[in-house]
Image 1 (spheres, rainbow, N blue to C red):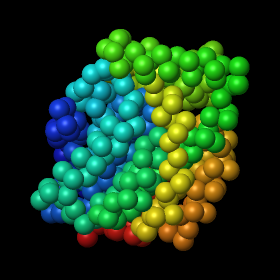
Image 2 (spheres, one colour):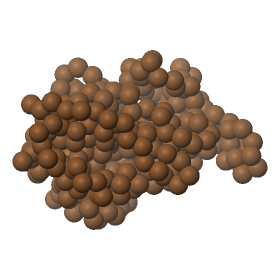
Image 3 (tube, helix red, strand yellow):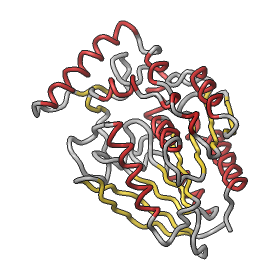
Length: 298
């Protein structure tokens, strides 16, 4: 086990600044680096720190960042989920770390969960300087996921999303939807999503619970499943059999498209169980074994 330091890191992205925590193990000159960010509508302090600490103690540098409009990063409107901007933020962080002398840029790993799990698959399909990917309960097919949305509420959600999108064009304040709620009119309307999302919150950090509704359209159309055949690096893919956000059939099809580069695990859990208790321990041990197999700490 290694001692490590945690330092603030600020990286320019467009007109804004991305805030990150840079974990660096001591006594390793140029460690491999794991780049991490959260899924839908979450801050880096929402249960990702526990992963970052374990990686750092094992000898990996970790950069854990907030997207623009979120947490310590700048940008307005606050708590906007722009898939385009968030993917740009990933590319910005990858580019920045590629030039950093304190880590081994040739051993760069992308780590994602939920929506960011989809991002890291999309990025690995298009970028050449990625060594490996870890993705847990990834959002792989918006078309498949939207079929689980309550039909009676779907037209209302789409209407609000359209109003928010058009209003943004003329400078109006955002129209928002709850991320989770006890009603069915929110981004993730299942009971286990409501309970699961609340279970990862860190009440020391502000989170309004709502995001601009324009993201609804983008999430419906986002389909990493369509590009994963281009991935040519090792991928660890952990899926949740009882996932109410991502149909298990979509995960299985995605994995088939990544083969033979994928190590696939399918566990009898819900979407957010992987952040807690024995499932977190199983996840982190599985991920560390995967990293040791394909990279290792020199």
